[in-house]
Length: 305
Ligand SMILES: Nc1ncnc2c1ncn2[C@@H]1O[C@H](COP(=O)(O)OP(=O)(O)O)[C@@H](O)[C@H]1O
Ligand SMILES: O=C(O)C1=C[C@@H](OP(=O)(O)O)[C@@H](O)[C@H](O)C1
Image (cartoon, rainbow, N blue to C red; front, side, top):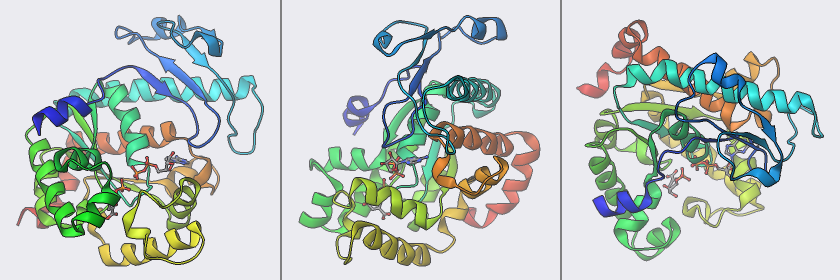
């Protein structure tokens, strides 16, 4: 298991992806390890796409459509820079309160645990792990779908619990958990060694994302009939009912509908992963700072029983 962890760890690096998933490549912001103050931020410079490997430069390689705005333009560039600076600052605010505690992202399949988790790990200087990948590694199979098919869902769930148990002894990790990890109370015991963060995404948006990449890698969707969106939406609706409030046990909740409202619109599809990661840091900050910790202690007390 430890070897698997070492092999699969994404070493902390400081590239921040500013792209919108599934679209043309966006921008990347590389921070020097020593950048931490206003003056140094101002030294960042804009370069073209061909300069990906240069050190310490802000690189915008393409455009993305943000709330109806298309084409490369200073507005988009500013949006990238703003988000990148905000997340860097917020991570610096939150990091001292974490004391190396791990962050566990929970949420339905497709909620962005992997995408957002990688961004969080980069800005916090943590390593990133995807628990599904660790299960595949420990079982010696190439996909979760294969494990479900050749062994069983119960076998997968047992392996998932073992992975979470092993991770719970470690520090400075961001872990993207499988969407079903929340159904076993023992998993919460392991995850509560760190800070749990729920990515709360409307089912329709989830189904759209999953349909865009196909349902092949998600075995729980294989039984459904219809086009990929319908298959995903139907199954996600049932899973959401079965799982009830399980996700709400998390220490922090990142509600995409709420972020969209704060931005003055209703379209969760236009939220960038970086904007979602910023909200995650804000909610983690609420939890780890003394005022937030008191409130959440009350909320989670039943899990400790
Ligand atoms: N904010 C977002 N907007 C649009 N698509 C997203 C966003 N976050 C993730 N995605 C896409 O949704 C799919 C599922 O994301 P992923 O991070 O793998 O979710 P999970 O790990 O929770 O299953 C991927 O194709 C990813 O590119
Ligand atoms: O919701 C679930 O029960 C599952 C979600 C998947 O992980 P993702 O959430 O990463 O897709 C994976 O663990 C498995 O297919 C079961």
